[in-house]
Image 1 (tube, rainbow, N blue to C red):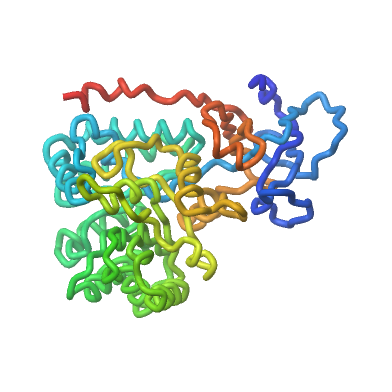
Image 2 (cartoon, rainbow, N blue to C red):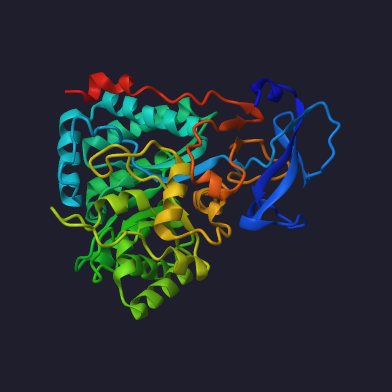
Length: 434
């Protein structure tokens, strides 16, 4: 495909496959894998028309895609950019969660000054942008003085990249931190920068009161909430249920996203049913992080892992609860791999959580659904009047898209192709090669 073809103010993308879930009004017949064949007109960087594909084409300003799949630019609603790319200097050699936590804390104490955090976070943003991500939410460790360093770095990057990628920040501390003056100061800082109030919920006798404090802080400052919950295989860990009850009890009207929720998968059907009903009533969204949880969960030296670490994504979705998938950690003690590529997230999620046969509208879990959960309802769509922020793949079907590397994708922003060259790992050598 010749990139010069996109340099016109008006052109057509002919014979393109898109998922039927992106059609507002389903007037176009869908075929296997719920893909529909369309022609898309782009004018002055926006989508002008989406029409059923026509067999004959006499237009000079058209690009025949031969059934190539087009997706809207992708949404990554749960990452940890501040931890990213420290694996080479701080590896987690036994792969356990507890060791990951200990190593990450020690790395932060030793290295996390402004330049280190800035460069590693921007490296992750560069990767995300090149792969076709248009919005990203990152959790940021916010204990003590680290909050001032990392949140200031975030604000600098948010401003620098504002025309290319929407960045959101979530404070990450354990919920007991919000019971202190430092926690209240943190809530004020998050409100000041327009962030999301977040934290890790752990089972403990004070959990209900801790949650009530967090909900009160969020309501007073008009903040949305984003929790880490139940990242374990303990059937007695019911933080997701507790969060839903707290949302109902506090009559919270903002958006709430809960990440991980792994223990739901090892609880009894009765406990699961009650939790899902409460999550639905409380209007919570759930984000699953399959790559990281598959990596961390059920780690025992010299033994083969038994379970996958994902939550009950099918049951949650069947109940009408918004379900998203996201990257989580990247090349750090919590996950030694990754490249900030949401297509890889979807690829692995399909395999790990059996999202295929049929694929249904699961592609919305990395596009439309996380965009809505992040309050960015104008993103993650292919609609008339929207900017032409699209990704074109050579693959014609999901079976092709998820079987072969899609490194040669074309990313359009406002109808024009961007440079999809990934940053070289060597950029960080002076920081991570000790």
